[in-house]
Amino acid sequence: MTRLRATRPGGQRLLSRTLDTPSAILKLVSRLATKARRQEVSPVTIAKELLDILVCPLDKKPVRLDGDRLVCSECGRRYPIVDDIPVMLIDEAELPGQKPPAGSGPAAEKGR
Image 1 (tube, rainbow, N blue to C red):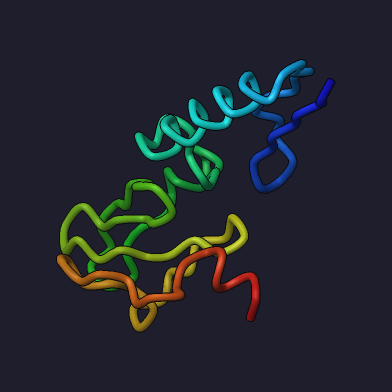
Image 2 (tube, rainbow, N blue to C red):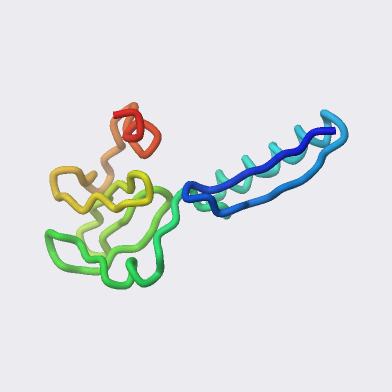
């Protein structure tokens, strides 16, 4: 028997199950990966109260959570979130249509 636990950054528990066969483990991991790709399981969490007051530092318009980025509703700049902390610096934002550089994002930022 195998005990499987999955948590989000910050310790919020996503699941805790005891699985008895390797195929059951693979099936569950595959299902979780599919949900993560569809962003049904958000990789980052931002308190609603904080999200409600955050604005783009360039044009002072509201931002929305999109995966691991905050996106400005006006200019489309994408601000990264590192260790559940929004990095609201204009120089750190991705421009609309710009792909993030390889090795960037929350996982890469944690290693710095």
